[in-house]
Length: 201
Image 1: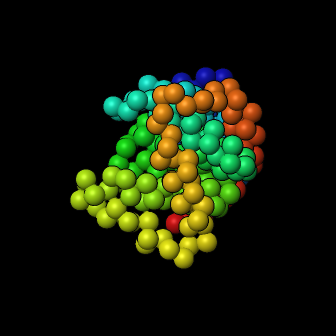
Image 2: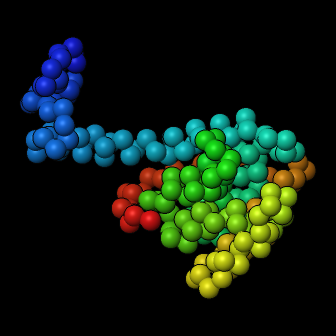
């Protein structure tokens, strides 16, 4: 069946019942149909994340390495330090938000990975710019010690380690960087998990 019909009951190619044009009027059968499609859609998330990561190789922004290489170096350092799989994947993905906006890239990246990673990794990615700000916030007229506003948070030490030992050092064109293929099984494992429902911020 095609979707050439118009009016209040346009039909889906795989749904034979009536389809309302307002969500408040969707039938239980149609909602079940949608939920089945959404469940299937989640199976494509690992491929999409891999595609996004590959696309960051085109994002250089004046650095000596691309954003993909920066993420790979951050993840390589995290793995060498004994970080768990969630943190390694978070390190790899922490800057993917730059594909959309440099200004708020931590928030974008953090929300993208949030349903699939631990609360610790979500928070570290979300605030990593404040911790990294020690090295450049003053140039922007911002407080270089913005990290201190997070003092007392249970994951403060993790964010500090992430910024100071991995992220801040990951701009070296001569670093022995592990390739994306090395991390792909971890990416696929993490983003194949059933997504958890996250509370509103």
